[in-house]
Image 1 (cartoon, rainbow, N blue to C red):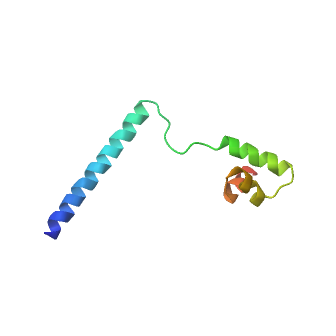
Image 2: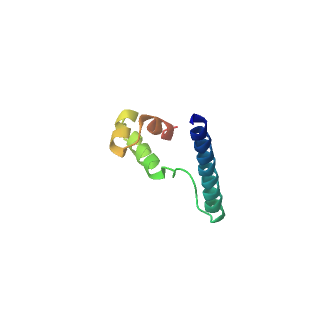
Image 3: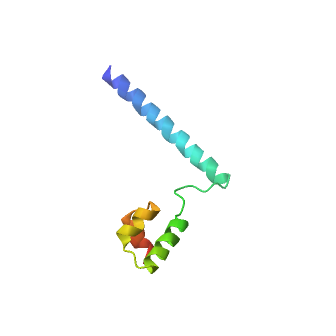
Length: 75
């Protein structure tokens, strides 16, 4: 009985993987951009605040950006 459940779960997992792969391929052929969008506006805001003399922790609070993004934008 347990083997049947595991076989069904594996089959369903393979179906999900195939549908996801097909969807990504279709989106690529349609020219859609995949992935997380770049944070140009946030980077510019952090650089402006840095020029005013604010530290990276304070930069992140006003822009909803994390400390790592603030530090990365300042490099």
